[in-house]
Image 1 (tube, rainbow, N blue to C red):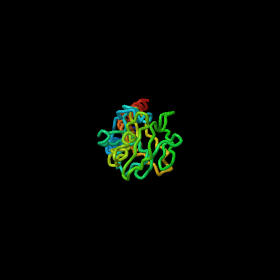
Image 2: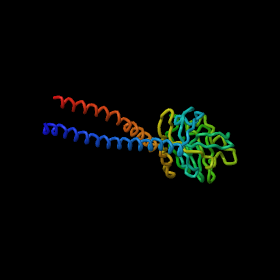
Image 3: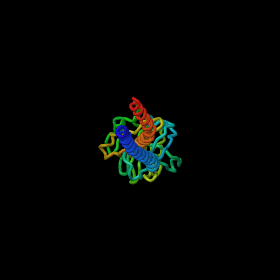
Image 4: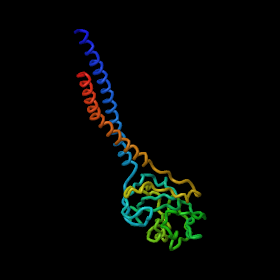
Length: 257
């Protein structure tokens, strides 16, 4: 009798202890995954709010790159960081004192004109502009040679036929240019509809380096990874309980046999 009792008790005691230890480790890993996931998920949103600001584009002056009503994310950058080819949000009192979205085609010290061979020229170089509507001219009215004052920007809409841009302000004291300090942000992506990141225009590379994309992809990756960890960690409990019930059922069935 004593020997039979000992033989039955040892496996049960050993099995329970092993299962409990495994369960504790699993619970700790699950909690860690949820905690890390929350940090990544919430941290991603906080990071995005600090780095980016959303804007709704009111007009079609930037089509086909950005259509009227599109929602964009503009990275908060200093005006001094803006380079040729960037699409920027700016606010200038002489232009209406409302946020506007245009493309920077020339910076302080540049000489911009149009058109030579049907193309915009900056410092005498013809600029390839693949972002223009297909079949459209680089400029309809022409642009006399303008030297951009230091610390200023010359801006055009991608839809040249209907854009109230620097060409509409050539008679202003600044020859249609805007101070760098007027820039509120650099547009990184169109998020509604989800057209994704804006392409950097390579036509300006011969004149200098282009801006690099902001950390939007990293932010999105952090949010997605955080959501996966939270959901995965939270799902561990129900899955572990179900697996435990199955193991107990198998053990009881084996004992009955």
